[in-house]
Structures are given as C-alpha cells and as structure tokens.
Amino acid sequence: MLHDNLSISENGHLRFAGLDTVDLAGKYGTPLYLMDEDKIRENCRIYKNAFKKHFGYCDTIIYASKANSFKQLYRIMREEGMGIDVVSSGEIFTAKEAGFDLSRAFFHSNNKTGADISYAMDSGVGFFVADNAEEIIAIQAEAEKRRVVQDVLIRLTPGIDPHTYEKISTGKIDSKFGSSIDTGDADSVLSLALSQPNVRVRGFHCHVGSQVFGEDVHGEAALKMLGYAAKVRKQFDFSMEILNLGGGFGARYLENDPEVDIDGRIESIAKTVKTAAEALEIEIPKIYMEPGRSIVANAGITLYTVGSVKRITGYKNYVSVDGGMADAPRHALYGAKYTSIVANKALVPPWCETSDNRDEFAKNQTDTKRVQDGCEISANRLGAEGSESQNPCRYAGSGEIVSDRPADDVKAEPLLADLVGRCCESGDILQRDALFPSDIRRGDIVALLTTGAYHYSMSSNYNRLPRPATVMVRRGVDGRSESYVAVRGETLDDLCRNDV
Image 1 (cartoon, one colour):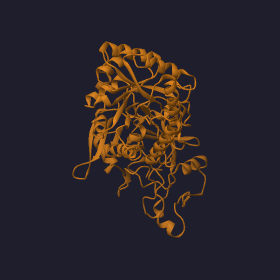
Image 2 (cartoon, one colour):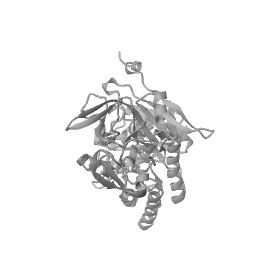
Image 3 (cartoon, one colour):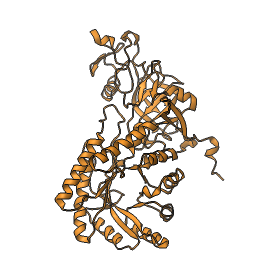
C-alpha cells in the first residue's frame, strides 16, 4: 500500500489505521477527513530522534501548522515536545485555546498587520520571523509600547530553486518572502533590525519550498546561509545563534514518489553545517527545522460517496463525488496528483495500479496485454502462466499484490475516468485519469489518499458547502483502534452564522 497505515480487510474494504473506512463513512457521513493520530506522533518522533542523534538536541523541531491547524493537533504537538510555526492571528488563537505554550511559537507571514503583531505579543509568541523592513519597524513600535525586547529571526531568500511546483517554491530571489542575500536587501534589513533597541536579532530563517525529494537543497541552503553569517559577523559584528532551515521534505502522493529518508537527510545536513562552520571559522548555530506536510500528509485520507458515473462514449468518463475543490483544493490550485481507491471494492478491479501502468492505459485502452512489475495484464484476464496465475495482482491503490483470488474471478476491464467534485466549476477535479472498478456506481465510497496536509487548512465554503468533519483515529489503551471527532462538520446554520 502507499502508506503503512492502509490495508485491505478480508471483505475487500479499505482499512485506515486499523479501522474499516466504509464503517467510518457510515458512522460519520461523507465527505469526511480522517487523521491517524499515531502516525502524526510517529512522524514527529522521526524528526526528533534524528535531531537527537545527529545534532545532540531535539527541541528545535517546529511543526508548520499551516499544513493543518485545529486544537487537537496543537495538543498533540505540545505532548510530543514540538514547537509550532504560525502564520496568522487565527493560528495563534487556536494554539492558545489548545493550551500550547506560545513561547515556543515562531510567527511567520510576509505581511503581518498591526493587529497581528499586537495580538502575537500580547499572547506571548516567542519569535517573530521578520520578513521585511516595514515589519521590523512595526515590531519595534509594539515592543517599545510594552517595554519588552522581542526576539526575531530575519527571513532571507538564499536564491535556491528546489525544482518543485512553481507555486510552492519560496527560496528563489524573486520570491515574495524574505530579503534576498544576492541583491543586498538582506544587509539593509539586518542593519535596520540591529539598530532597533526593542528588537533582538537571534539569527536567520530560510525556506526553499515544498515537496522536495531528490536534491540536497537544505544542505545547499545551509551553506549559503552560513556563508552569509560569516560575512555579516565581520560586517556588522553580529553572530548568528539560530539558523532555521524551514521545512519542505516531500510526501508520497503516488506510488512512484520516492520515500524520503528523514534520518539520512538530517545526518547530511548536520555534517554540512559542522564542516562549513569549521571552515568559515564561525560558531555552529543551533539548527531549527519546520516540517509541516511530512508530519501530517500521510496521516490523512478523505472519504467521499459517489453520486454519479458519467460515461461519454468515445470521449471521457467522470466519477463524481459529494466533495470537491472546496475540501480538496490542491489539484485545482496547482495540478497536484493523488491516488484514490474505492474503499468498499478494494479487491475488485483487475489491474496493478501504478502510475506508469495508469498512464499507459490512458494512452491506449486497446492494449491486449502489458507487463508491469511481473504482472501480466490482458483485456479480460489478469495473471500469467504457472504460479503467477495463482497469485494475480489485485488493486490496492498502490500496485501491491493483496489477494490470492484466482484470476478466473476477474472479468471486466477498469474504467478510466476523472474523479471530480460537486462544485459548479469545470476545474473541480480531484484526480485525473484514475482507474476504477468497471462496476463503480452511486453509493460507493471513494478514499482520496494522503490528504492530511493542505486540505482542511485550505478548505472553503465555495458553493456554500459546509466543511467536513475531521475524525481522528488512534490505538486505544486496550490496543484496539478507536475514532473520535476532533473538528465537528459544519451545518447549514453555520454557513449563515455571520450573515446579517
């Protein structure tokens, strides 16, 4: 399966964190966000253990809560010893309501309003990540009124392209975030900040972008930032205490997306930082990181109910569900790709679902036979000679062999279709060119995988649709999996609550 918290039950239903998703859909309704509490905690500990191992401390992992933000998540971060990255008064308020110690919060945003800055200081936010000169002046004014000194990191753009989606790339020179090292703007902002009596500059922050898999962009960013630190130590007599390298490690949305070795990446960053600091003859700063997506993405799935299956002969097919871009906006925003599975028919379709296989099927639906990962696929039959025919591939959304049902049970080809939502927009698409069981129909349950990041947090009431509930799943004290509501689903009354 795509993630290890997914499995298939004997009755062919998708299980998530040990619970039957069809049962959960029946109990709570759809659309429904599901979050795996144990997976969230596991992901936090992977980062903390790696930092402890390679840096000798683990109190500098900051959850980027823009990825997903509600009270129970902040409680989990508090219990796991994580800091938090917040980007608005709303996130600050939510964390405060959850009892989070805001002295461990880092306040981001390229445009903090006067009200934001005032509220953050009144709430005891520990660090401001200052984006520009105007913000430095505003922070100084608010801190002076309170007769306090505010800790600040200066956000810099190191001029690095992570080669990811253009709309989630943030470290290039022409980014709206931060001050560029290469243009000299960073010098001007730092000089201004150092001259403010109520602003205490503790170090620098950078973030190159999201969905980073292959390149060592964090190591490259660290080298650029350490080089800059060595320069300003001489130029401004300023020593960097803290270097925050942001987040950005990728999450697997497709079977052919690679796994990111967090421990290996942290080890590489640690070696780079220590070697470069020694060569530059500067003190090794305390390293912070701000993972968001890689903490919660694989801890979430979304369940939908199929409403219609439209087959346009000779053209295209559509499977429509009761959610859409209002609760899952990433494909509409920047073409993000996903894996889906029909939760109540997880063993039915006759193919091995991999992205290569799907793309080939999309290009030529008349193929009579293909070989993919050792699985022979024919128009009406899946299997091969000898032992292979006794162990055919069965769809599990990821290309794994999950059933030993005889190949003779399989009769029909899959349906190639776009998975689309109910919003009144042609662009309301959740997954293009998905493969479904040929008998998919109204009432079936579809699970969209890897939706723990940037779904609930980016959701809207477009078309006046209520936002779905978020249900957490965890292993209880008796060892059995249990579910509970973390965010209630909105009602129709909620949609008009603020109307006058």
